[in-house]
Image (cartoon, rainbow, N blue to C red; front, side):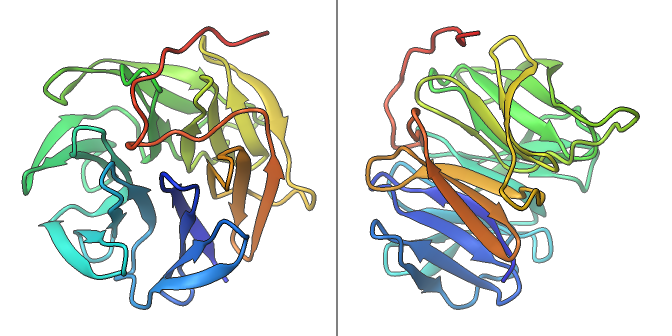
Length: 260
């Protein structure tokens, strides 16, 4: 298998793409893996909206798709060759693309608008639980950018802000998936494992996988929303943690500074 691009819903069910089989699968609350969509349209990442719809983007087809609870799909917008997608509480989507250098798009009401740029190769993205700041990973670097989210969905005050750990002499942490926990920490899938960042930028903790393989996708979910799922191609790892999942279905949540 080639598992990547995960997202969880309000129940704690986790959806992910099996790129090898071009399918979308679901991990239910008992940990069983089930087929959800048999033809994923060569999608490479997912997000779940406030309405429970599963959204998928594809850098191959350029389509943003929406799937209902039965796995029935419809086209949201065409012509956006997305790397990662993020559903917003307001009903719109942010999509990172690399047709233009590190472009970030807002997809809403059937329209697409470029609202940001900066990363050389934009990959995963997530917003803080207080829905004020957006983080976007720069996929061929050791950085993620931070943006202020404006009321109309546009982005401002771009800053190369989060610094990921790399080996001496290396400049590429390979950041992919990004997710926030309800309590505030930001987690990023990297070559070295799951890196957890402080509010002021640097990595505080690295959780390596038992086999030391690269993490390409991650999300929080599970029955109590406190299971961290790490996706590493042919394997999916999980462990209980002391933080909880958030998503477009989560109300505004105040964020406190990270404990050092």
